[in-house]
Image (cartoon, rainbow, N blue to C red; front, top):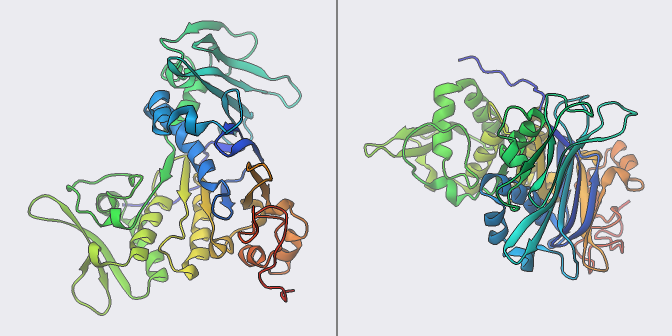
Length: 414
């Protein structure tokens, strides 16, 4: 079956602002790129940024209350010492050159639990025109403007949701008469956030092809089966890349056992028989899992990967960063890392460095905006090396906060 990896138009998040979410007291990230990587020492806020996307995705898939309760409500979610709602604001384009759309969601908590204090969608269709808010809700009541291209002259329809804890975009986005709202709902409900562990990929699931890897990767054999049956060229590409990274690897296959379960097997040269996945190295299995995500024939419109360096040999990481960049032509990737080796495969506009300020709140800056970094890279320096040598303005794990105070790990480096 012919299978080509083509560039496609997907929504792109260009801006993120988060207020009152754990250590994110007021974090603003501008000019996000198709591949965006967050680097920083332990405790700098990388996982919290990742969890913002997970929280929003879960609000749409399982509901606000379940996502809220899972995180122990305001007791653990709201920034310590702060008041007011948790706010998540995204600016995105549905496709290149289309108008920039802003989605604003404010969540608060009352005696009966969490509720949507404010939620709105707006866009500016013309470069010099004023913004038009085509969805505007507070506490479960508001209005939405119908039509393919909602504007001032279109009908505003008042709506009242069954409960103030319902998200208007998720509820109204199920109706065809609100196509812009529906597009955002499809975008968010389609996000894929990876929490893969090597152990989870060693399972023996029930046989049956599955199109997409689960969040923990426990259906890896099913995805291999699907690719073998429906997208053999894509599977061959995955194995080609894997064999370049893992010496002497020849074949990966999923065999159906007599009891109907699926067994993942990996063959190395010069041995005649393959070995079971449970005897394969952690690094090989995790790299295989990541490649099935990055070479997905129809990838999610946003993919999040947390700390891909775990269990992988450091020399494999710059190549994995390049695979992420290639995949970002077809999806948007958000990656967290504390690996200088993964960072060595990145470009200055793709890498954000996080640290905690003197009040304990997360701050971030793109390496492209740091003094001298682009010039270093133009001369052949690698970002990971610049980080461990102390050339970044902050983010050094050996300082007390990772903040602006510098400590060079290699004082004689030039």
